[in-house]
Length: 193
Image (spheres, helix red, strand yellow):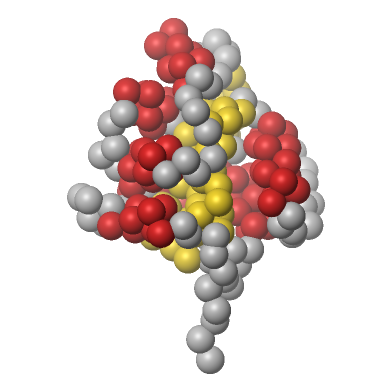
């Protein structure tokens, strides 16, 4: 029996950042009706971090496999109420700021903006000094001035909410779900550590 498609739904684009990557996957699993746009870099991060997608049954997966990113056309058909771009690398944020749409993630962001679909972006480079999880453990990261400037510039975009923490991402998603009257699955237990 074919499963009915629910529209509009969440769109989520994963980039090649390991910064809160596992936690972002856990949030995706709480959404239910979600389309996941997996960039080539995100597919590499999945392997590096030994993560599994384990998506909800009603989720759809789109991989970065064509130069024109055909799945972005769904934005024009009203398939999405919200785009979440998380985690977003400094490279992705920079491209979004200047309007370059040459990856699945940046193309999705561009089309969401053109269709006035609200976007929530979790920018990885938001402070002069950060701790981030790498495959080998926690590392110190020192974003460049241009990375911080691009994150600040993205905050001025229409229909775009930029968050700078996992808690901020969770709050923005919960607020959007409440605004739309959508349920969220229960939070997953926090890992020790």
